[in-house]
Structure formats: structure tokens, C-alpha cells
Image (cartoon, rainbow, N blue to C red; front, side, top):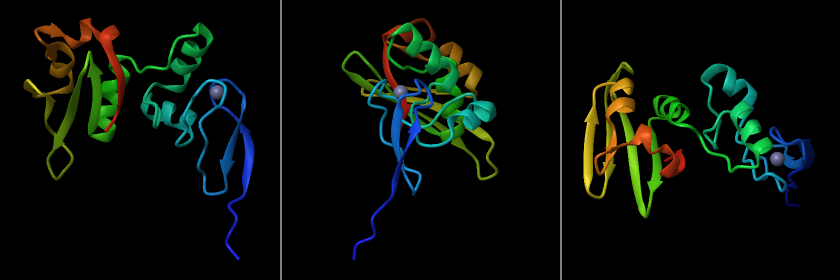
Length: 153
Ligand SMILES: [Zn+2]
């Protein structure tokens, strides 16, 4: 007899709508607000001020839900997620960009690389990445509104 995976309904972390969760800890996407939950994001916010897999922190996501705007991490959340996870992506216009944080075997940051089809930039620190990363000469920090779907790779 195949093992049936038991499911239960739990409130969405963001909007409170009921979401299916199975006994292995997998959550279905929230049918009301679209929030995707991969872990306990209140705990993740306390530790890292981000979430998984949505990147945007839970408190920020709740604010966006109340305002009726799509979930999207801000630049600081994106950078925190980069330092935590190591490999991120975002889209700008029709192009996809990758951002990778390289570390030595002891975990110390070596550099951060921003790669797109027509650019490769390297930065020595998260601060330098934040201040200097650019797309076609426009600083990413100044055009974050034009950046789509900042996400884990
Ligand atoms: Zn929801």
C-alpha cells in the first residue's frame, strides 16, 4: 500500500488564509496572497532579516500585502540573502543577472561578482557591491524599482 502523505491546514504566515502543509513540512503556495513558505520565516527574520524562498522578510512582506503590491525583496534584503545563500539572481528588462559571493574555505568573503550577458563586475565587499554595482552605468541601488524577481539561484 502506498504511503499517504498527511496534510493539514495552517494559516499563511503573511495573510492568515489557510494553506496546506504536509507532514514532511512542505507548504503549498498560499491561494490568497501567493506567499511561498519554505521554512519558519519568523525565525528566519529574527536571525537573518530575510525569508526563504521569497527573500523578502516576513514583516516587509506583510506590509507589501497590506499595500496591495507584489512581494519583492528590497536591495538590503537581497544583499543579506546573498551573504547567507551565496548565489542570487534578478532580472532587469529582458536580461537575467547573477550575483555570487565567493568565500575561502574558512568562510571569509573573497569577493562578490555580478554577471550578466554583457557585464562582469567584481567587488571586494558587500558594501562595495551595494554602492557600486551597476547595469549599463546606472547604479543598481538607484534603479531597484526596475529590478524584477530578486531571488535565490
Ligand atoms: Zn497568504
